[in-house]
Image (cartoon, rainbow, N blue to C red; front, top):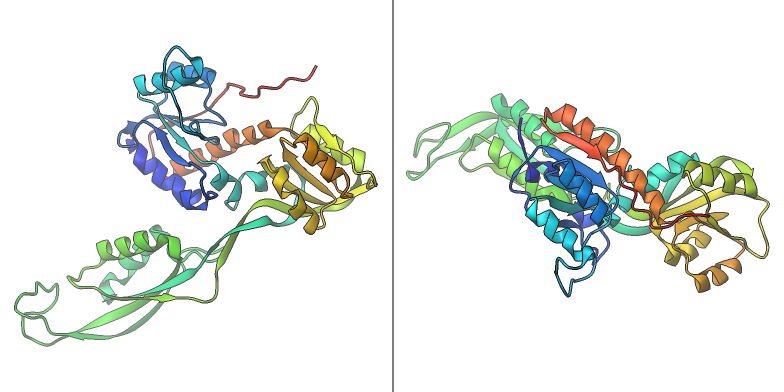
Length: 373
């Protein structure tokens, strides 16, 4: 099936919702429109002139990126400046650009989790709490003959996801009674005649962020003109999210061995290390935050991390870190390019599940501005 850009982003947002981004983070559509058919989608870490050239050459319709291309307001949009000409080139070639930034860091099975997998860090939890999503329960009454259809519609909309289980629900059968008035157009029964129907009461739980979609799916699947349903707030089952991860190595490693492992895992020619004055001889507990996470180093300390891995450590902050007793490894910002292959693998999985006719590409352009000599 041909796919609208908006349809793909709807699926993307089920996995990586915009509301999970940190406050002020300009995630979402930056350039172009999603109200068009897309045949070719490419994933990149950044939007740079060379990436745009690659997208044009590959006839890309939609570019998904980790770093928002318009992070700060533009003061000029001229084609004489190569930095801004790329925006005009994207518009001219009808290439839409959609960004997922800190929400990709925060989501479960996201970038920081992938880093932990590479480093063989287990028993992980988030480093800094960012969001709490409360749960709700929907109870809807339908004719028993429509119960299966309703459960399927609710599950497809995302209701009933509970831990490692999906499509969970509870059904109890009973008798529904009603009397349509003269203006009613009842599916069952006649005006001014009392009616009773064998009905099922279906209960499902869902995160509060999905209420609009869940209710819309319920109404679309319901045969009645005036569906009867209730929505309850739940005090249990709240889901927490956070940025960064902290966990344990299966066995403690000598400090220099762990540094070498990080260099190998992230395929780096070099990395920066802040050794504390009181150097640790081994590493067991690891904290990591991709991108520029130096501001969270005190959280890593509070989590009793032996080492904190993050990028773009500032010179004077490194001095402060040095006094803490915690090792700090700065592998650079570009390790986030891992998202390209990982995200396209997910896209291909969704393609197989949904039957999409669309081609996905990993950007082959390196956007790392640094080299080691």
